[in-house]
Image (cartoon, rainbow, N blue to C red; front, side):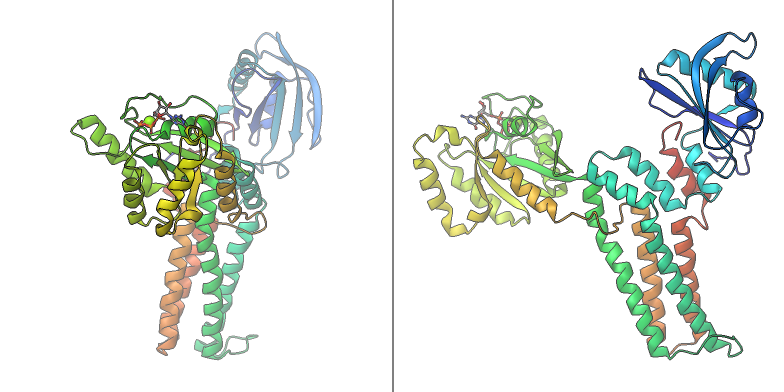
Length: 464
Ligand SMILES: Nc1nc2c(ncn2[C@@H]2O[C@H](COP(=O)(O)OP(=O)(O)OP(=O)(O)O)[C@@H](O)[C@H]2O)c(=O)[nH]1
Ligand SMILES: [Mg+2]
């Protein structure tokens, strides 16, 4: 077990990123936070005032040697992030000073905090529910403004309140169902079975909305994956480099240069977009190239978008387009590369004419990886698709754990509804509803499995 229940040690850790910086913040939390910090920051009063800052010298415990001039913020028991008495020492940034202060704190009796232990304590002390605690991690790890916004909404409890609303509805349905079992239940009007079924259906559709938001949430968090595929020498690696505006992949005139997947990310309208360059598709005897091509196919299957890169200066390019067209992949686009070689536009005209019959013109782009011409249009197209994911004003599910539990609740409700329709005994229906309530409690962390909690907090960084 990673965390010890009922642990009342006073813990300390560096809360800012390790390395050199303007300032570094060391956080101390626990019922002896002030008492132990005072041993090295003697300028702190015995009874400090919550939410006040104090300035002075931080000194070595044994000989009183000054270590640094620091500012200490003090938060009283019940008024801090963790819910415990907390002190935060802001010292000059730099590994040497912060390490020296941490060493002194350990000498006074503090214990070095484990990963995520501050947030864990906030959760155990009821300052955050589990959904909010998970959002702290998402917020720290956000790679784009959009995912940070979604995480912040979750930290502010918006998603938790959706989950709590589900809990309230389930309790309401259960209470009215039980009232029909036990007529002596006072204060509840009895409700017809059809009204209960209707309420259950309404709840199912609310939960379904959240389940459907996961796809969106996953995209906001992880972004879009775009696979660049095509025959060798079409210019996939050149395209990757042009999109990333850096020389990420090796480009040569030799067909079969790329053997493995090469990735790079950009941010479009706040959504991370990862481009995956792949090995050119062709029949080959070469073992390494063959494995590379298998990976290209896997990358295509995993991607949200597939960009077929075509070299129209090659004689037999139409065969490629026909093969790709036959795959009928949703969200696939045809990028005709090397437009810089088509000085008079003749090639473009004849090319577009010869694919007219396939009715893919809406998905065709005319680009040059060498001059970057046409890439702005491609980016705008991706950004337009990404816009559909705009969800700043609605709650989205981003965690696989939440999705799994919401699906469990749906299956309990489906069973309950089936039983209602069969006119089954209310006890059986109540059983399903109670199970659904148990799952909502698991979702919010009101009831938990220690292994799950362990897994969640282990992902945190030290000092958070
Ligand atoms: N003129 C011109 N040449 C290009 C363009 N894009 C790529 N090339 C050239 O085409 C050749 C192949 O480019 P790559 O980017 O390595 O092609 P690839 O599709 O990654 O090839 P493999 O890795 O072998 O599958 C190189 O000589 C590039 O300089 C382009 O837009 N215009
Ligand atoms: Mg390549």
